[in-house]
Amino acid sequence: MIMELNDFVQVFARQFDDTPAEEFTPSTVFKEIEEWGSLVALSVIAMIDEEFEKRVTGADLRGVSTIEDLYNLIQKK
Image (tube, rainbow, N blue to C red):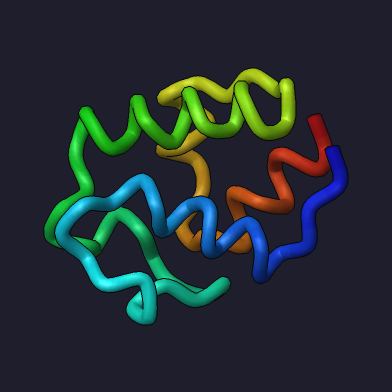
């Protein structure tokens, strides 16, 4: 599935229950968000699998910093 970066940011933001969606931009360093943790990481991995039919690992998430970096990684897989 092809998804534009801004759409990906919105879908990514929905994985967070307590952080307002407007705090998310392509340049957001998602690991610095207070709510970020292992459960959100698992939600992000599941969302990518469901929306893109791509597999990312915890190591993949640790290897990127911003939402845009993650988007670009998914596009390369």
